[in-house]
Image 1: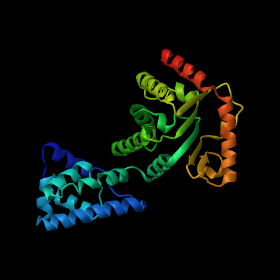
Image 2 (image 1 turned 120 degrees about the vertical axis):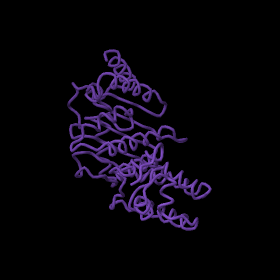
Image 3 (image 1 turned 90 degrees about the horizontal axis):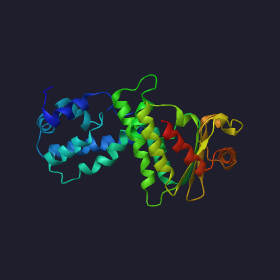
Image 4 (image 1 turned 90 degrees about the vertical axis):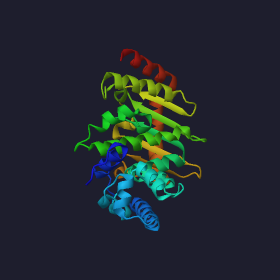
Length: 292
């Protein structure tokens, strides 16, 4: 395909990379990309532009234009802005960017973020890594680079972006009450190196001082608690319902039955009581920061 310099060249090359395909198991994502593609095609044809001509204008090859219009590829957000301008859509194509951006996030992450966005209370115990809502971008990137099989650079970018997008929970007008209990090891393992970990601890101190957030540390010497079975998370909603999961309970699947949730809340309550208080935990993190 013809090379295009500048920003359009970057658009074209990124569009050719793996990772922009639509996940066939993601029904919502498939529907969004198909709708966007159909709208692009209708507007291009109404403008009297051939696919090749349109491709040159936006920096894509003709084949890639057909793939996007056919719902086979996820368009970049910059592409939608260019297409809006070229086709004179008056912002209607650009307005699709929010949904398209969400399609690039893995479905399971989108589902989790959606639930977190609806929650009025979040309870979380983590025994292996920092909870995703507490992570900095560079910490998350370093952590995700340890995955095996290795993630491609595009997959890494998408996973980190999805994790960072979840942090919008702190900025909600009616932000939920957030309770985190972190095992000591999650704060002392030098993920990403000394400086990455130092900035992570600084970030954690900032988050822990938000009025609706409580961070507690479980010292490694305290082993006699029900957290030995793995992570616990419970999300509570305004209508009184809730959903939760634990690594070694109910097959690790999310549950919403009140009897099953009672088990998770019982375990979380004991863990929370055994951990350092919020004030003690802040002092502990500050001490770690001074030693890093």
